[in-house]
Amino acid sequence: ILRLSCHSVGETAGGKIINLLSNDVARFDELFVRLHYLWITPIQTIAISYFLWEVIQMASLAGIFFIFIQIVPLQILTSKLTKRYRAKIALCTDERVRLMNEILTGMKVIKMYTWEKPFHKLMSTIRRREIKVLTASSYLKGFNRAICLSFERTTLFCTVITYVLL
Image 1 (cartoon, rainbow, N blue to C red):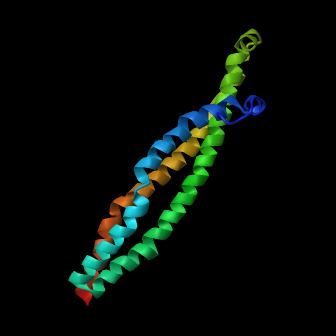
Image 2: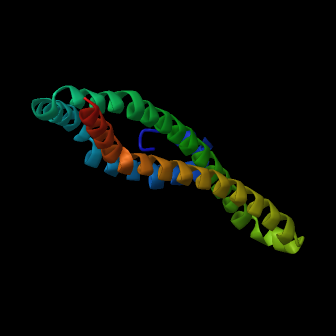
Image 3: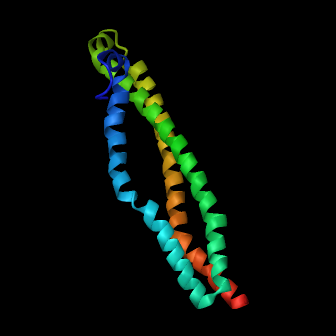
């Protein structure tokens, strides 16, 4: 926003600017918390794989194989879907904020011509659509968290079953 010219800022919808300031700035906070996982995860994977190999040898490969075959593709899929839902949510939120801004700007005209009910219906429709996308996104987040919570146990289960069968 700071780098945009006055002309560009004038053409940009108010809802988009508010969305950038509220949602995208929060993502930068999360970035610094999660950035360290990029370098620590490979180190942890190598160290844990080594220690598992030392203790249970061939059975450790089952857990590692399960991680790379089952979990990684699921995480890639859910991240792509999350990206798609974020874009839809941003569009719905921008539309709602833009309409609300127009309603507030033209409140006198709306009251004068008694257009409250049609605008309420329009606003409710837009909000319902936004809530529908937010609900689907929340289900996806819940599914992703469930995968993350069961990840360790299912990997351990595969490793132990393989160890017992060998």
